[in-house]
Length: 397
Picture 1 (cartoon, one colour):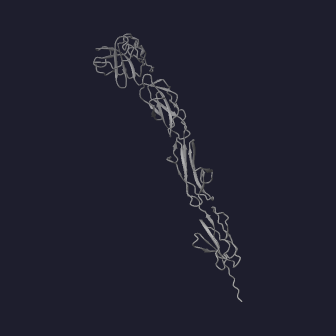
Picture 2 (picture 1 turned 120 degrees about the vertical axis):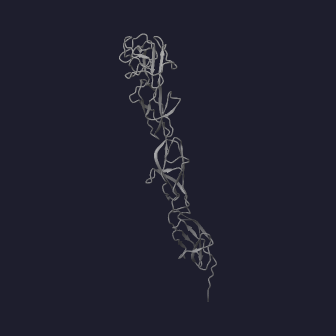
Picture 3 (picture 1 turned 90 degrees about the horizontal axis):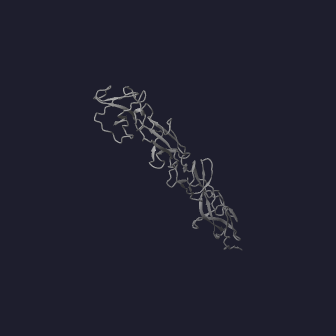
């Protein structure tokens, strides 16, 4: 007697235990699969990623089976089924296999027009960019170097405060903890503070005094950010502002009342410092002398019968404007010797009538003057009531 057992019942649909619950991980893992078949028994398990092509797990004839570990990066839905010993096929179960072992791409930093490492007095916006083809980017980290993490940072930030800390590095971390490489160095420098008030060194010259020499001015200001780039001057601290070298040498004549100067510093991003205290420069190289005028051949003579006779003490003594003062009461001529021309004014005891001539007076004799080599300068006064105002003195206005 032959007894034939007939099994038309499929095994139970497998149960799957996935230690990741279908989430991303960067660690190898295995699945535990269970099923049962009350008649012929389980023969093997199969898996597929498309439910069309199935692969049999070897040595899987058991109600409980542990798969070989997943070690290769994958992001797929895995399907598993069970087959009994007579070929009945169970239902299909599924679970996600998500394995990510690769860190994000190297971070690039979009500075939105700011030149990396340059100084600015404007806000700086920076945006971090990276990619991760598996679990995705979770967050960014930053550091002052590539040896240690200083903290986490936002993807897009605008910096408005001053920043002189120097160099920063960034890297991305994905959702399973894989770390990308550090970015290149990025440096932001924000300077919104103006330079200090400028101090002026006149190098021995006394502000407001008259001089015939050059006046050298040296300027000093500090700037803890971008640094002092240049200096500017103004005569009133408001208008006619121009750049000026440092040091600055004044080697030209000033007006009669001199020049007032204010100096200020400007840093490398355009922040403007406060004006210095005012100072005054008075400089003149003209030589002034009073002459007693004779015509014809009297006196020592000079040119074409013209005699410029110096007086000092009496009408007949000579030397004037050097060894003493001229007491002669009938001075009828006065001349100014300058670097470019000579001026004559005639008439009585006050030849200029108390005023400086506005134009060069006419003179018929060719303007070729006797030069007194030891005459350095006479007192600079516009009124000459007598030639006693002329003497070897520094200019006084």
